[in-house]
Image (tube, rainbow, N blue to C red; front, top):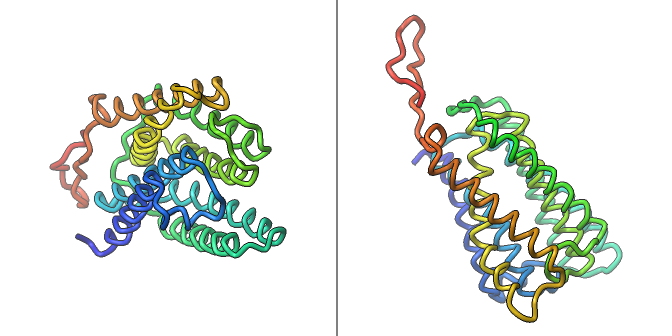
Amino acid sequence: MCWRRIPLVAAGGASLVLALGYFLQQAWAKALWPLPEGRLSYAFMAAILAGKAVPLIWIGLSAEWGALVGYAFGFGCMYGLMAIYTFLLYAEQRRQPLLLYGGVTLALSVLCLLLLGVTSRVPIADARHVPRVMRLAFFVEVGVLALVGALLVVQVAILPWPLQPESSVLYGFVFFGMALYFGYALFKPEWSHSRGQLLGFLAYDLVLIGPLLGLFAPPGPVSWLGLIAATAIVVGSGLLAVYYLFVQKTTRVWVVTKPPETTGAPASGRRQ
C-alpha cells in the first residue's frame, strides 16, 4: 500500500471506532464530547462520524486524491465554525472540556485546509459525468442540509429528539459542512467528486435509520413532523446512494481504466 494511503485509511478507521463508541454510548467516547447528551444525539454523532470515515477510507484505498478537495472544503469549514463557537462558549462558561474541544476542532480545520491546498490541483482519475437526475437530487440535498443547518443554528427544534441550545448550534454547523461537501459535487460534477458523498451518506443512513425508526414507538418523538421528514430524507438518500453506487449501469463500475500516458500512441484502455 502506498504510504500516502495509510494516514487516510487509519484516520477513517479511527473515526469508525469513535462512531461505534458513540453508538454504544461508551464512557470513553462520551467524555470526548464537551456537552452532556441523550441517546439519540450520540447516535447522530455516530452517524456523522461514520459518514466522514467511509469517504476517507475509499479515497485512501483508491488513491483518488483529487476527491479530497470537496471533503476538505466541507469539513474544514465545519470544524472551523465549531471551533469558533466552542471558544466563545468557553469564554462564557470557563469549562475545560470546551477549551479542549475547541482546540481539537481548530486543529482539524487547519488540517483540512492544508489538505485542500495540497490536493486542489490534483487531477482525478474518474471524470465520468454525474447523471442529470443525480445532480438534481444533490441540488435538493444541498438545499435541505443548508435549511436544516440554519434552523438548528438559530435553535429551532427541528430534529425529532430534544437538544441543548449549544448542541443545536454545533449540529447546525455539521449540516452546513455536509451542504458544502455536496455543493462541491454540483460545482464539479465528475463522478470522483460525487462517490465519496454517496458513500458517506449511505454510512450515515445505515447508522441512523434504526434509532429513527425506534422513535415511532411510545413515547414517541418530540416532533412527529421532524421524525417523518428526517426518516424520509434518510431513506431517500440511502436509496439514491444504493442505486448509483451498486445498481445503475454507468456508475456502478468502481475501477476506470486510464489511457496510457504516451503521445501519439493509441489508448489501450477505454473508460467504462
